[in-house]
Amino acid sequence: MVITLGFEGSANKLGIGILQNDKVLSNCRRTYVTPPGEGFLPRETARHHQNNIVDLLQESLSKANVKPHEIDVICYTKGPGMGGPLVAVALVARTVAQLWNKPLIPVNHCIGHIEMGRLVTGCENPTVLYVSGGNTQIIAYSNKKYRIFGETIDIAVGNCLDRFARVLKLSNDPSPGYNIEQLAKQGKKLLPLPYVVKGMDVSFSGILTFIEEKAEKYLKSGEYTEADLCFSLQETIFAMLVETTERAMAHCGSNEVLIVGGVGCNERLQSMMHTMCVERGAVLYATDERYCIDNGVMIAHAGALMFKSGFHGKWEDTFCTQRFRTDDVVVTWRD
Amino acid sequence: MDVDAEPKPDPLIKQGAEGRVYRIQFLGKDAVLKERFVKTYRHPELDARLTKERIRAEAKSIVRCKNAGICTPAVYSVDFSTNRIIMEYISNSETVSDYIYKLSDMSNEKHTEELKNVSAEMGRVIGKMHHNNIIHGDLTTSNILVQHIDNCWKLFLIDFGLSYTKSSDEDKAVDLYVLERALLSKHSDVSWFFDNFLTHYAGFNKSTERVVKKLSEVRSRGRKRTMVG
Image (cartoon, rainbow over all chains, first blue to last red):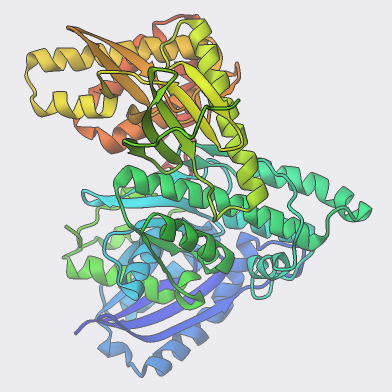
């Protein structure tokens, strides 16, 4: 019986989770929400994490009804993510690991998402679409690595949505993407936007520039409403993601899709992916906001897999890095 | 264009992510019919636009390739109302992907030599295509056919749905990057294949030599690559 404590804080979500084997004992989260029209900056986000992390740790321990001495292993996000917030959280993880004399495991954030998705949905060997504010990747497992078949060549899909939400001054509570999704439900008229797919890679920065530049004109003239623009943006960029995912499936001969990451909560994306899957006789696996959005449990789970497969890291290696690719990790826990 | 009677889509050759390819007879010739499906997950307007764009791109680039002396199947008929395109059937052919698998399975010197020739010829053909400012958009070993005639073979480029015309080195380099990644994920056992391809691609002329230099820039751009130096 292994009890794992996981710390996550690579972006604006601070998450602490406790797992007992595959059972979630607690999954606590605090989100740094900025005013409408503003994004979150590394320094302020790090401060948010610093101000909340001790309370959150106590909350998660008491919810899980676990005493520090009962914990077997501590895990934290090594990267990728924003430098300041990563360091703020790693500092606390390192401190409690020393205080309680527990092994400390550095976890790749993307691997955390994938493994949590596999645990929650029970899928075997899916083609993974990982979509969030900082990442957009199409991933498949082969030969001890999660290999990236396609990815964004510029900004992440969530970043594209978030930045458009800022143009419209939508609220960042609970998340800009959620508010775009709600508004898009009333959209009817499709604005033709650039559609940028290069092989299995996608690009969003041109689309964002295009819609940012045209938004004011269209809104003023009444040609398109805010809802129409949100709708058009979603329809276009999600179609790009579904298309490239389908191409990766055809390439690998896969019949399972798993969507993970914050944008994975979006029900329109899920429904488009579902339609594609039904058409090709495949199965879609998706999770809800508890596990799609960054959380501590996923870090605990991925770390536990590393721990159980015999991971032994040096203390000097428990640092953070903003650049840490999914395909840099050797997957020791899968065949 | 009206295709007399509904062509009988009997033998299905390939079922891809984008459409189906059938073997048919067209005006007494062996032909293939490529039909793009309606993607119901996409907004109908977006789907119609993309399908039309891709059929048009395919027909246009094939004609451009033909003019440049690059082997592609000839286009017989294009029908936007049914999203169908009818093309020449390339007899005695297989994809380069299958051919690589076959050759690398029975690896002996003769087969390795043959693989080298294939990658070199790919370099020359794609060099020529880029020299003519045609960007393929989805270069993989599944999108190149090898036609065997007696003891010789010829390469045919197919699947131009994502293609376009552009003279910039950037677009050509991204085209090569797509091919490199496809080779890595599918044929990692013949890792020298792409290098040999690149040597012959660069050797095509000055313009392709420049593209190869640009490629190293494109490679380093993938997100969150570890920075060295």
